Length: 304
Picture 1 (spheres, rainbow, N blue to C red):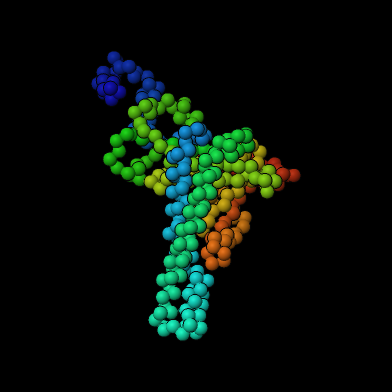
Picture 2: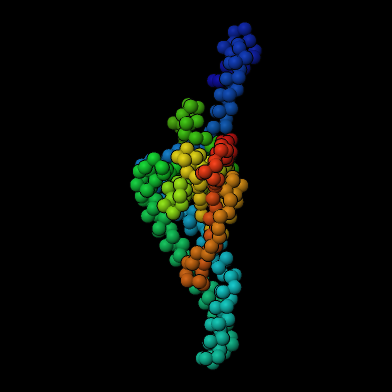
């Protein structure tokens, strides 16, 4: 109907309802919205009812690093040392044939995978418990918050979300745009939380930054990170820290790109010293020096 009106306005300008230049500008803006906003992602605060989708998405995000963690642990020096030590013990002390001693290689590989799998399963259970208490942990005071990224898309999609471009907007922008989403489905595709730190003076922790694997590389994580840092700035925090493992390289690079700096690195034991994970603690300094702070807070970036 809108296109028909536009065609009539071109064929008969005197009788057109789009006579003024402003009307044409408004029309093209409307056309832009209707064409580009068919796939949108809205960043909004968590609300009751989001638990189930958050559970599944965050759990999948934690367990998706199992394979990369397994190969990382498998090719560590200590893993080869364990193989050689076990083979030597079997050969020297038990007198087993050399070919039998070589069986320690697949045995250590299996043990490494089982240890990694159990460690990540335990981590997933811990995160699942935290997600169950989002309302109490993140939403019970004014200094913490939890946000989700909610995707609106057509009910009947013949292609994967990876094939579409999504416009990422805030909840306020969504309300002001008056976009009609009554005929669209919605799902939680991303999350992030910010908590007051008890160990850092005037500091905050950014946690649970996660995006569904089908919606990555679309700017969703960047916008979630911006919302969290802007919230930290508004609440008067001096810094916002985030911890990333060696197996979440994409998230770590994103944080460094958006103004975070490396604060420290440490090895987190998973199964004693045999299986460890290298952790990176990154910090975003909002107020580099509280005593002589005169500069304005850094702005990360704007929504697309």
